[in-house]
Image 1: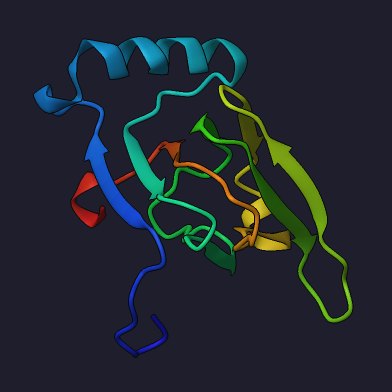
Image 2 (image 1 turned 90 degrees about the horizontal axis):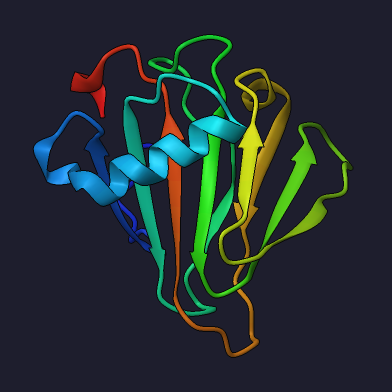
Length: 143
């Protein structure tokens, strides 16, 4: 991160939706996601938050290989967690959104240039959560 090696405060995986390892269950999930957020998704990023100590800092997604105009759909599984979203710029306040199990949050491609999002740490006792972030990538070699 920023030319430094740091521990990632959650477990991560990524796979092409064309990969045979994606299996029928993941393809069925993508089919349901497409009903609410239509796009020809090519990749899923999986983040495993083991407990309230796992988090992700405020950021925007890298856009160099995202297809312009296509959404990013985030399916939340497991424990409820909050996501913070804020407009980029000094002094802006974050909006807190509670992501319930089974909820789907859709971000536009354009939002990656204007807003940041993150999952903060929490001192509350919370269980595990998996986020499935479906994206349309132009070049799967860059995953």
